[in-house]
Each structure stands twice: as structure tokens, then as C-alpha cells.
Image (cartoon, rainbow, N blue to C red; front, top):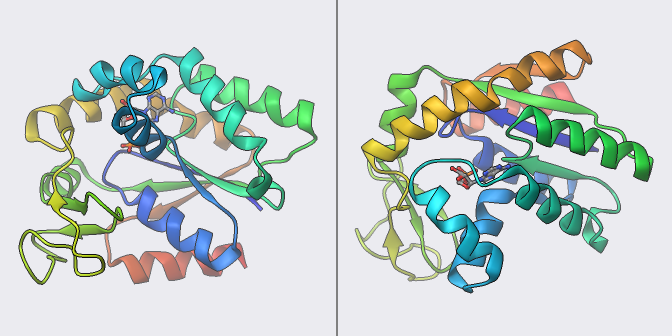
Length: 213
Ligand code: AMP
């Protein structure tokens, strides 16, 4: 199974991608997570990406295409994978098409998640995560038991530096301009299936899994 999670930041792509990944035993590949870990490890890609990410802008296509090409040849992708956060531009989608046809791979679906902007802003600015294990929290709907400590591993609870109100509005306008056109791109290929992302994580997951099975 090969899936692409498509939607604005805050629509739950990462959360749903991870749940589908658990159900189908295929990796969820989040380009945002790969970049954040590259920044932490101070690699060259991390250094290149950091300034763009902090401003809520997209990292250049050539950097992202290289990164995804390197990731998809890894062993765990043999039985399929979920792409969370890639492609984000038409150029990236075209490069992915080319890569798939060179490697004999076929996209099953682009899963589109839809949510209105006011709800996205509320979700993103209240989102938190564990700096050690990456577990997601939300200060309104799903807070950790202790304000600053992860329930699972005791790691420190942090806010992503690009989840501030100012950066979130920039990310949403970048999404409208650069990524939203991908819905038409996948629709015209008969690959797009959209879901209303306004609901609980479990409700939305159930709808997606029903569709996939
Ligand atoms: P995410 O965790 O998916 O919200 O991504 C966080 C940030 O990483 C984005 O705002 C971009 O700056 C960068 N990023 C992640 N994936 C891509 C991509 N496919 N193309 C360009 N930039 C990306």
C-alpha cells in the first residue's frame, strides 16, 4: 500500500498517518520529522532547512526531492509506505511520479483531510509534543498529566517553534498557494479521496480504515 497524506498543517495528517502505519505495518514517512531531526543533529540538510522552517516557508524542492529519494530506497519501504508532508508542491509531485515509474511503484491513494482555518489555528497553537519520544499532546483536548512531562517517557513537553500564531498563518498561506493545487493534481489522476477532519482522532481513523479496507 502506498499512500500520500494531503492536507493543511493541523488537519491531522501526522496523527492519521501514524495510525494507518500501525494498522498496515508500513512506515509513516514524515518529511517534517526528518527535517526536525536533521536540525537537531546539525547535519547539512538541517542547517539548510532551519531558516525556511522557522519562517513557515517551504524548504526548496531539490533538497526535499533528494531527501525523499534517499528515504524510499530503505529496506522498510519494501511493502509500501505513507508519505506525510510530501509532496507539497506540483514540482515535488511530478518528481515523485517520475520516481514511482522508474521504480515500478504505484500510488494507491492521496488521502485528503479538510478542516476550516479557524479550527486549524486553534489546533496548531494548542499543540504540544514530547521532545524525547515525539508523542503528540494538545493543551485543550489532550493535555499531558503533568504540564511539562511526557506521560509515556517523562521527556520534556515542548511547543514546535513553527506552531506560534504568526508562523501558523504564514504556513496556511503557503499551503493555499503551493500545496492546495495538489488536490486537483491527484483528483485528475483519480487518486484523491477526501475526508472531513473535524471530529475525534478515532472517528476519522475509522472512516479512513473503512475506506482502505
Ligand atoms: P510538517 O511537520 O509537515 O508540518 O513540516 C514542517 C516544516 O518542514 C514545513 O513548514 C516546511 O518548512 C518543512 N517541510 C516539510 N516537508 C516539506 C516538503 N515536502 N517541502 C518543503 N518543505 C517541507
